[in-house]
Image 1 (cartoon, protein in one colour):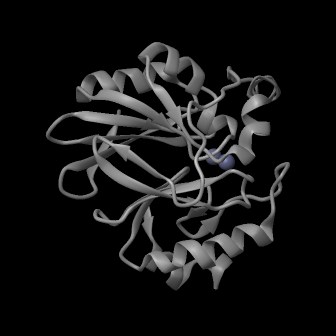
Image 2: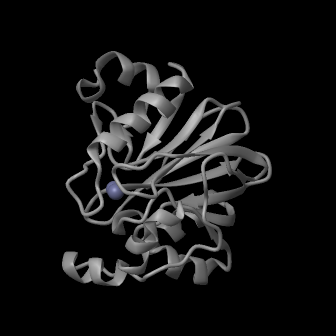
Length: 218
Ligand SMILES: [Zn+2]
Ligand SMILES: [Zn+2]
């Protein structure tokens, strides 16, 4: 099940791949209090709930990086099951979140439309068990994609903006390649080489590794 890994003192993360798209649903929690958040519950809620129970996490909120089905398709149902609020993404993804049920039918996976309890904007802060994440609005893969950055732990939740060796697709509706490259170069690379991140699919990486070898941002 969950692939548990420490990302810094006090703050821990576990990745649960969900949906046919193998999206990295991430559990984040404080080691001491066990209070935490579910990031991008795209689907497979049974697996997410099992991981929450096994790790003993008291979930206080759901965070969404963007409005695609593999990230947000299970958010409304999980919100109801857990009785917590949803924060993110940026309101520019409302059009995607409103359309999740139709997206689900197109892909043959169950999904519900969802309206977050809080939209996020550039410079906003969200907390997970008191650990603070700064919001960077990074459009391009989707108009409302956000990256969540915890500077003290040098750790970010990347969504589908930047991957190990790749970047987010921009051939979906509302994709914008130039905006994506601009966001990566002006907002993400300046975070520093030692900034580690969990991305929406595949292995984790660091800004330094991508600056050095990612062919899409050379
Ligand atoms: Zn996506
Ligand atoms: Zn994705």
